[in-house]
Each structure stands twice: as C-alpha cells, then as structure tokens.
Image (cartoon, rainbow, N blue to C red; front, side):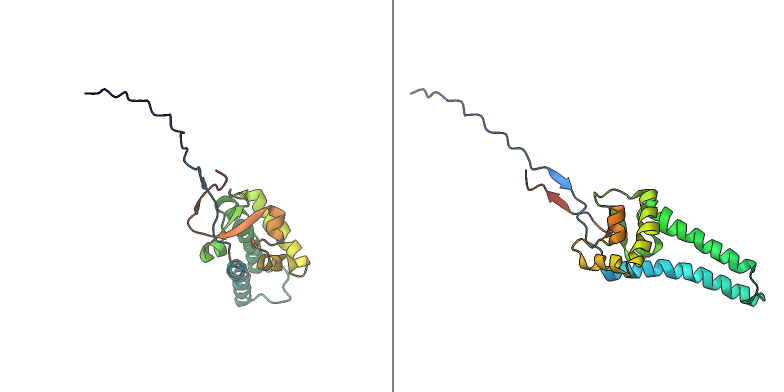
Length: 173
C-alpha cells in the first residue's frame, strides 16, 4: 500500500453577505390622492363652521348680530380642530384625518417621523406660500419626479402611500 499525504487546502476567502438596507422606498403618493386627502381635511373644517352657522340661524342669530355665541364657538372649534388635525396629528402620527382615509403618510425625506414643529412649518407656512404662488407650489407636486410640492420642500418632507417598506440590497456592497 502506498501512503498518500493529504495536503492542507488553501484557506477560503470569507464571503460576507451583502448588507440588507431597510429602505423607505414606498410608493410615491399620486397627486389626485393627495388632493382628495386635503379635500377631506377641509370638508371637516368647513362642516364645523357650516353646522355652527346653521345652529346660530336656528337660534335666531342673523347677519346683523355680530356677537352670536354659537357662530363664535363654531369658528373657535374649527380653529382648534385645524391645529390638531393639520399640525399636532401629523407631527405625532404622520397622518391627518384625510391622509389616513386616503392611505397616505407624511415622512421626512430620510424616512423618519416629521415631528410637530415640522408639521406646523409644512402646513401653516408652506401651504400659504403655495397658495400665494397661485397654486404653483402645489402643481410642483404633480410635476416633479418625487412628488414634492413647495410645502414639502420647505419642511423637507415627502408624502408616500402607506404600506410595506421594500427591502433592497445595497448595490455598492
């Protein structure tokens, strides 16, 4: 019998798995769906004022009674709901009532929650500036690739469709 000597195998190069990145690659919110969401938000506010005006008229208030309390209460209630729905709720949950109904979410561009300050900046500074430009700030959301309007650029936010996040692999690895 002949003896064979086993040679040690050369060490293998360690293969490292490609890193998986949790991406916030969600579907960009369609412009029409965004319009529907903000329409729902404003219908709620107008409904509060319309209901309080109706109650005021039923209780005998008229156009000449300047200090009618039911109209004043309705306007104050509409302002409180606007602040809560358009400022506080998006800051805490990333949605308004309209965006929740439409299945949309507001995020920072890097994927984090926006926070209350950024939500106030987006809606109470960015929206009026978009209106002042005769709607061109809103039109930018329909025409840009990422779907960001002037108010989104000011607050560094993006509106996306709610749903699963897509897992993508880092192409550089």
